Length: 89
Image (cartoon, rainbow, N blue to C red; front, side, top):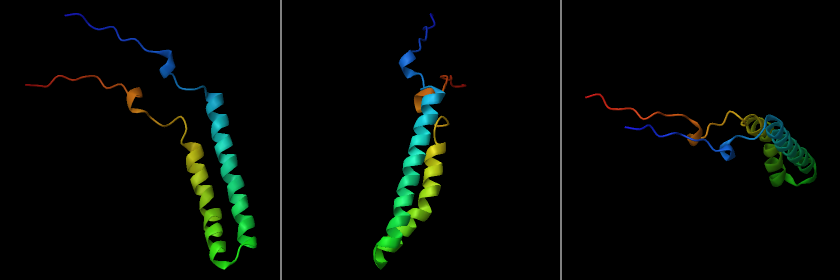
């Protein structure tokens, strides 16, 4: 029985670390700008909408940090090596 030669495609390679970091920094910056806008809207808007803007301003830092740190650690299903195992009989 012949073993199949596995070949790997370069198109499946992950993006470079520099590109990944800049994209994460850009996402974090945009999230913090939205947070700043929420704080400004908290001062400007009337009472019911003020609380929505304040809630957004208080929760966005947590969401932004989670989104910024979820970069290269993400494991895709096709990136994990899982050998086929034979059943023990």
